[in-house]
Length: 65
Image (cartoon, rainbow, N blue to C red):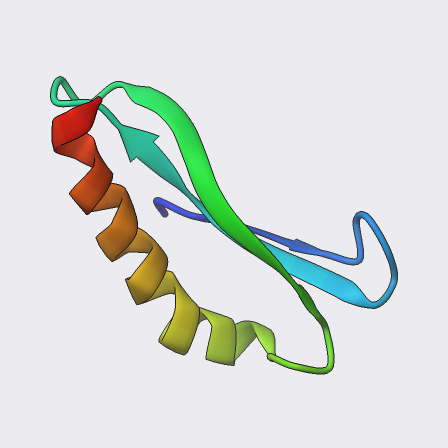
């Protein structure tokens, strides 16, 4: 899927989303993500609003890795 989501893993009130950060060869060198309060975003809104922004940042980091 190219992303990872978690629900109540660290705390019952938190959920998170992350994407891989890959180098120029396409190898994963890390990840970038966010942890938010569950009441702030539903899983669907995270996918709709936050996932595209995280993917964009991951792509922008690729040339410097």
